[in-house]
Image (cartoon, rainbow, N blue to C red; front, side):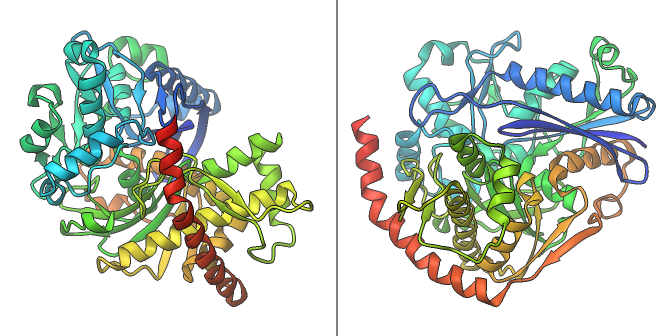
Length: 492
């Protein structure tokens, strides 16, 4: 069966058309940028995603019209922790609040202080970017919006609503809302009540690989797809990225280096570790879970430097890769949107330290890329403290295109890094695989295979030593500036 996968990310929507043999026939992307109307806010009009989805699917249709028109099912992946608030008619009541939105820091702190035991149930300490604290913020600060609220959706579920007319959520995306009883895989009424949300305001739950309906006839006709095209529930991008990379067995590990970054280890049992700031969430496949260190910054940090100096990201990365010999005098904290693991610090901000008169844009790019690699080393240690030892890791996401970043990560983690064919569209491929599972009922192990290896990067001893020294300076700089970040936020 030919299938479609849609992945709604923070800075772009990607779509993949996948053939019966599991190979990607065509892929497309449509870019956008979140809005930041105030400090610590990150929002997006959900209609921007809808337009991007129709544009990307239209591009696939132009690239491979015959295969596209024969697609039998479509699945979804989406950035997690969002808050799309809709009224009874299904209209968005306000811009969606994204995963890197930090406005609900007070609400997150209160939930931690008053409902600490819930963290073991919902898999993670409450943090500002999660859906639950944001709903509590809306209730207090936008009461007219909260009064009109009929249902809370995650990012990809709004797209699914627009294609099918039906509301719903899946376990893996609901896992990031701070409302899911992870072990039992159903909504926690206690967590919903703690955030002031009525159970009637959240949609029914299914597994990510479950079929949930077909396309609306008008939508099918507009897209050029059969009206019988099956729609799968889809899931959160971390879990669906795992499906795309074949990380479905206990111990499988991968890094997703997109606008944000995740280090994920798969498990066949639920085990919470909230005190380590590790996220313990339901996987996109039944009977599976994963533990994740989640960082709010990743490839978006390099894109920021490229915008700052006025050149394309690919050009800047190529300059940085030329004759790279390891960390230099310039250090960068990449915390443009605050940070989760290991700091839970919504106030943290990006910093360049050690600039001299001879510093160039290459120094800025290298330092920012090194900073992201060093945050991954910290994340690896958080997971190791819970018993998840990472010795070999796959790399997916847009940042996986960079051979330099791959070398840096291998050195910072002192482990092998594997890149696979099509790794940059991992979640979109995973979404297409969920669509196939929904339509065929096949065993996940038969469909969720690891793509072919593109290359393996082994840690270079000289770089391993250099990154170990840089990590100490990196950590010291954050610890020194942490109180200053909080003071700066308090003054705004």
